[in-house]
Image 1 (cartoon, rainbow, N blue to C red):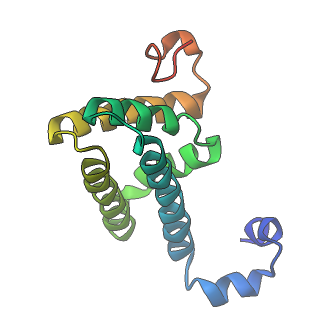
Image 2 (image 1 turned 45 degrees about the vertical axis):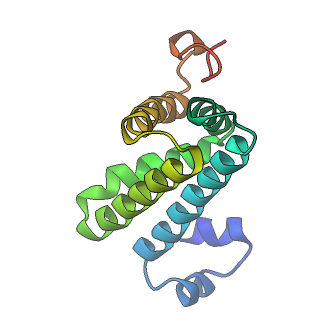
Length: 142
């Protein structure tokens, strides 16, 4: 908590005034990351010509996510052994899934495959996997 307070430019007691626990702080940070990803998907898909194009554009926008956002997502999945955090992370994942359905107009199966690819990109991005292992453009290969 001291490092978080320093980075945020606030006192440690103020963090506890805002968040009753470390779990609550993490849940708020995780929600913020998911919201940023969702906003990126929506902005990218605005000019799409159809569901497939919308998914491609959204996937490309995901590649712009910063490494800390990727790590926050992975930490959420790893922390899901805790029932309270599992409920939160599951809720954010299903909310994002439903939003991608609405944003893109794609089928549930296509969105599930989109998320499967996104999981690979999340792990690959967090681990700095060489681009030779990534899918071909527009999803991030070079």
